[in-house]
Every structure is written in structure tokens, then in C-alpha cells.
Length: 257
Ligand SMILES: NC(=O)c1ccc[n+]([C@@H]2O[C@H](COP(=O)([O-])OP(=O)(O)OC[C@H]3O[C@@H](n4cnc5c(N)ncnc54)[C@H](OP(=O)(O)O)[C@@H]3O)[C@@H](O)[C@H]2O)c1
Image (cartoon, rainbow, N blue to C red; front, side, top):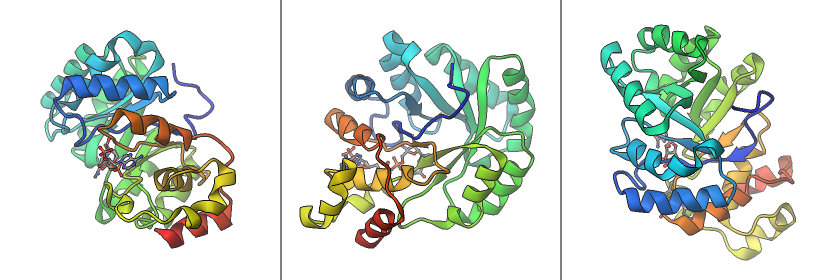
């Protein structure tokens, strides 16, 4: 069961473009993530075999995990088939999200029934593109969702205008995709000297600085960086521990990014 008070602030694990259909790598990465205390695992039928790999990797540890996956189809029939396969792979889905707002009004009807009958704990909705944030806000205002997933990092701050304040007002949980801008923000890391003021906050690497920047926004619950490398899960997970940045440290990270 998900803690009713708050999901986070914590670091989770994304699964897009990292282990895909490579079940062996998924086992390694997910095993290391669980050892590092990571609990929230995000996936989607869009991620080319990632759901099946994640399901296999979680099998023996299912009680320790919160699975946040998605329905991604224009048709209700196919959406229901996606859900049936997820139940096979995961046993149950804690957070079911409607991917990229696809047919969200149609999919929501049957998903609400699943939630009301206790088979799904929370319903969410996602979009990756600022061009769709107006529609995402419209969906949130229906108050039919418990969770929203959106992109947020020092180079993508559009969600600060409307979506983060709205999610806070509605008491919704916020999951942050793309905390590293799909890896772009990590290509030219600042020097150790630049990061020195952040050491007192437990930050040793640039990846940790970016994750702590996201999680230090009080409206955010979970950041879900993806990695194909087992050893990076512990590094990332450590950024989900206090102390949190204040405005000065957040400003420094934004400047360095
Ligand atoms: N991108 C989207 O539009 C989108 C949309 C919907 C949902 N999501 C969800 O959000 C998740 C995260 O977004 P994302 O995967 O697009 O991008 P991201 O998490 O911002 O960046 C992932 C990249 O960061 C690298 N990385 C991870 N930890 C690192 C570390 N400690 N040091 C150096 N490099 C590190 C990974 O490379 P290595 O594999 O080499 O570690 C990977 O290439 C997705 O996996 C998915 O679950 C994304």
C-alpha cells in the first residue's frame, strides 16, 4: 500500500530507453535500485519491452515496490488489454497513468471503476511537451486524478507557471520525468569546486545536484531518473535524502546548468 500522507520526496527509477527488452540488465539495475532504497518504478507500454523486463526483475521483491505504469492507446479495448498484461507482469498496478493524455476521457471511465474497486490505488496523467500543458491543466481541474507526471529540470521550468501551483492547490502527487533533460544536462558537468557549496547538503556529483534541485521544490514528490547502469542507482537515490536545498542552492544549480 502507498503511504497515504505523501509519496515523497524520493528518487524513483524511470525505464524509458534504458533496459528495454534486456531482462538481464533490468534485473541488475532494478536489484541495485531496490538495495539503494528506491521504491517507485515508472514504465509504459510505449517503452519497448520495459514493462515485461521490470515485472521479471521485481518478481521476488514485489512487496517493496510501487509500480507506476501507463495506459497508452486511442482505443479503450487496447487500453484494457495493456492493463491485463500489466496485471500479469506486476500482479497489480499501484499508480496507473494515462500516457500523454491519449484518449484520457475515454480511458478514465473504466480506470475509475478499477480504482473504485480497489485494484488500482491512484490514477495519474502525464505529458512531456509544454505545448500540451494547457490540456494537462484542464485534465487536472476535473479533480479525477491523484497524480500528475511532468518534465522539470533547470532547463525546462514551464511547469512552474501553472501546473505545479495547480497540483499543490489540488493536493496531487507530482512525479518528475526527465530530471536530467534525457541526459543532456549531464554532458558538461560543473567542476568539483563549483559544487563545493552543495557538499553540506550531501551532494557529491552533478547528477545528485540536479535531482536535489527537483526534490527541493516542495510541490514535487518523486523524481524518476532512468539509468542502464546499476552503480548509478545508489548515487541517484542518495539525492532523495535531506537536507533539502533552499533558494540560494537552487539558484546556484540553475546557474551552473
Ligand atoms: N523523456 C520523456 O519524454 C518521458 C516521457 C514520459 C515519461 N518519462 C519517464 O521519465 C523517465 C526519466 O526521463 P528520461 O529517461 O527521458 O531522462 P533522464 O532521466 O532525464 O535522463 C536519463 C539519462 O541520464 C543518464 N544518467 C542517469 N543517472 C546518471 C548519473 N548518476 N550520472 C550520469 N548519467 C546518468 C542515463 O544514462 P545511463 O543509462 O548511461 O546511466 C540516461 O541516459 C523515463 O525513463 C520515463 O520513465 C520520460
